[in-house]
Image 1: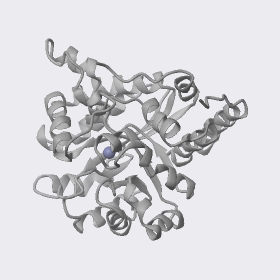
Image 2 (image 1 turned 180 degrees about the vertical axis):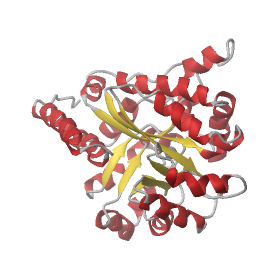
Image 3 (image 1 turned 30 degrees about the horizontal axis):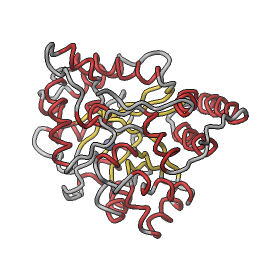
Length: 339
Ligand SMILES: [Zn+2]
């Protein structure tokens, strides 16, 4: 079984919109066809996890699956180049104009530390038609051993656009992250953090307090605590959300109870991304499908979500306005997919 089919006219509508993807792990995005080509005779069947009714039993099960592919495939900067080239072509095919993606410090460590080479390999794979910003992702206990000198220099990596604290919410927060995030922010780079995917509003507040970031990845927990939700508004925080990932990982009980509707209605700026499409079997259209089919987002509301991605994009103001104008023109001749 391959990817779930999204039917027209919903597919056509989402496809027609110029879009962003601002929460994507490059290790979780290696195209299945590339695995098949790289390892002939293996990976013949698509993963069970691609079925739309599949649910992971635990984060550990998910982690084992994703690392199984990532450790096998990502063994050199060249492999990153080959994968990123396909991933970005996939973005162009989906009418995506702007991407923020991260590569994971755990893999950098595993293959002997060529962080800058991986960064350059991903950069070299960017097609002319796509704007891509590249982040180094890490987890809450990564400031250790040989990674310390690398992290202490990370603010000097000219081609790196920023850093992201990846998932693994059960690892306790530690003070080093506050120091590192501040230094990276002062160097003019963008910082993000995963938080509140499973651990609730407290986790979101800790990320905001400790890291001083304005870009939270997931942040679901904020929806269930009014002061935290208000804080997102007061501090102009953006949530980069991934509905398919949240449903399959059981961060929410089902698609219809996803709090993205509540957050949107409250005025929180949020965007939509796929997170780890290799292990969820999703394209952006599947994530927007949840908004439209399960959460009754209107075309106008979907366009606002898409617009949010361009509003936070790290681009020149002229470029941002050109994209937003394109969206405005589509909105003016809005299709009707209500069914
Ligand atoms: Zn993520």
